[in-house]
Length: 408
Image (cartoon, rainbow, N blue to C red):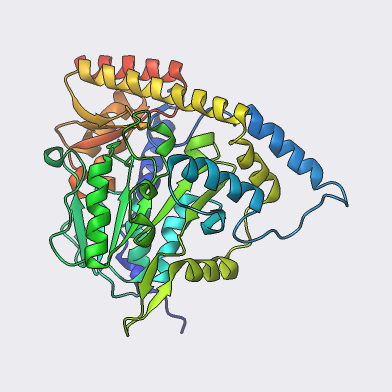
């Protein structure tokens, strides 16, 4: 008899975005002529920057010639890309990160889900609420969370992000080993100041805690006083791992390229209290389970750091931020309270009613898809997330429809 990993049975019955897709599909079957405007899942809509497309095409051409063809690449990523990442994303900010501390991958979702494999099953986890579901669900699968009761897992320490704390959680009051943080935040769009982030780094040092910092949306930061990386904070090299992605930065959601930074000075401990390099462990894990991102894709990602690529990416991100500003203005005119949308592509709207009911209302009366807050955690009750990833014209149309639906 083959037995399953019964931790999978502890997962909530449906992954958030699958449930949304099912509801939208059901509505479309009943209303085949209805035009649906999707402001739910955070998928980009603009094409790849021209500089990246050109580099992508040139990389593919190289694969057609004996002299330039490449087979298996280095699991950690090609040096030409890792060097550009280290220089532009870290050293330019004054962050002490070397290229050999960077691991190129096929997605921040994969990395944030896989990183938990490095840790013991009985560690104490602190996870924000609301939260990007991958952090939580992968730990459920690994058996760290206990059973699900009354909207939460028994063995998780939840870091509540609420209007009272500006959607930046307070430090844990109970002992923890591993903390997940995400800023600019998905789903709330909230940001964190350098002073606040320094408190988390100091806390991690004091209590021998590791921070997993998801910075996938850092390209949307326009406020120069906000940190783009946790490694801008003194001491973070010893207590943090950072995840980033080209998906939202340069539109690589379908192209797949990201990276994780694991400093060589970042340590964890065995049951005897002896230190071990997380850099070495992650390198071992990746070389065993991952064959690397394709050469043409890495060439395309490298082009994001060219002068043309940088300009084109700023224009792309500004386009989505213009959408976000429109959403903010229209939701404010309707009297809603919200956070996000200024240094983030997400607007977290307090709908002041059952969120799934509000989702259905907007879908069925306005033809607009949003994301219900409860899918991100108990603290998401009464909220929806609106994404700025769409064309400006469709966002305009969606806002008109929402205003008509709510005032009708």
